[in-house]
Image (cartoon, rainbow, N blue to C red; front, side):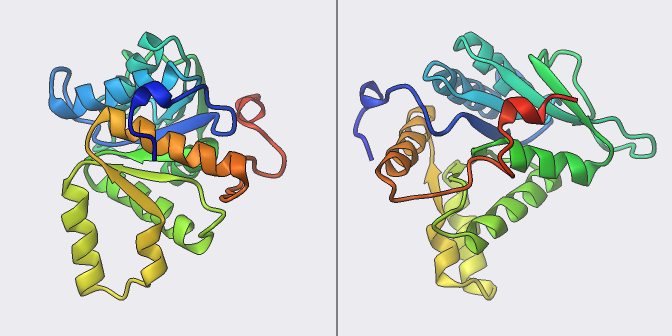
Length: 217
């Protein structure tokens, strides 16, 4: 992995990164500001941000992408019978929005649109997104989408999984844990270089449809 962010160039293979995390993170919180800065740095290197269109980490990601001169696309869901779901944040002023019919469809769309994932601290929604992303990475190891876990707390969580559940060794090789926006950017750049060398071959498109096409109704 590169030693300094000055070595990071423009991303060509990884076009979009999905940010997943806590909807209740507040502006000024370390979590909010970390997500915002990470999105800003990635946008400066040509990466489109993808998020769920809500508040917290999602709004931080959109704002960071815009500050970095980039774009933010969101996959949303407008529930009729779910009182505890945050929904679309009017302050999350994304460049494009795709509306899904169910919460599950929204989750799957977020996983589809990102060529990689950055997963921050969060609640049960983030846990479910992480579980799906991790499961897919393990199943498609060697062809999986890069999985970046933000925060030192992930070490304890993954160690607990390994100690108490039937986790296969390869599942512990499909992610990178970082603790700063700079390290997140460097980890993503590491994956970019592996893609260019042909060492790592995740499916960057689904059935030949790229991110722009996926947003066309």
